[in-house]
Length: 270
Image 1 (cartoon, rainbow, N blue to C red):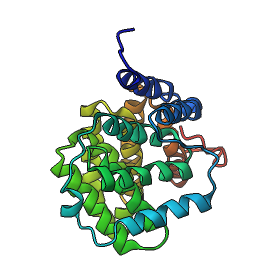
Image 2: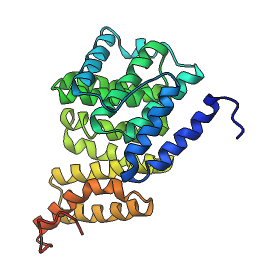
Image 3: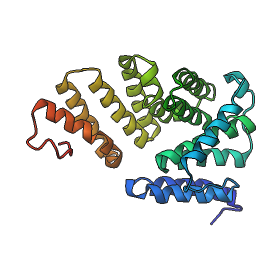
Image 4: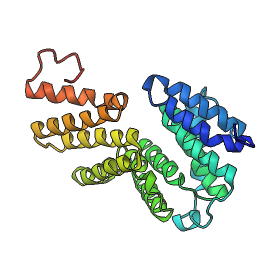
């Protein structure tokens, strides 16, 4: 009611996007809200994008980054109010989009960071770009830009993004480039930082990643089961049961291996 222009309404739309997306069944609706607002800000997207289009944007981004180190990228900081709003909405909308389309929005974050300067959202975009490089087999490039993401986050003092950036990097790139045992403490720390920042959804994602790594590191099944139980209870307190559903197959696998279930094919955990 007090907004003087559309730009003044953008923070309210972001909050609406987050609220609608708090239920997993509403992810697509939340994504559409974000895309509609981005369209009114001049960034037009459609979720009817092919894999070919996403790959074209990936190659375009790769070309734009040629010859640019982190110092060059950090040489310009974004200060335009509307561009900052666009970057924030790109990141928020990215969370709720289908997997392939999330990459499309993350690449746009990187492209705008190159052309208009970096923001607190830039690290998230580079984390996603790193994951894409990892997916196509460029592990050394993935590691390079994963470190870029961490460096940019630190230089921008974007501590509130810690959990989001780590949830991307440690679900993809760093699991392939680092010793798996060395990933446990950073992911657990990211989980705690997410709770401190109020980002309970990504804190829960980090909790799921932590349990998966602990299981693969051959920790005792009973101890992993206890950690799963504690973190599941925490996810329920923060109303993140939909995100925790990512851990249900792991829960069932542990129960099966421990011989604690009569119906191993149900895959529904406890």
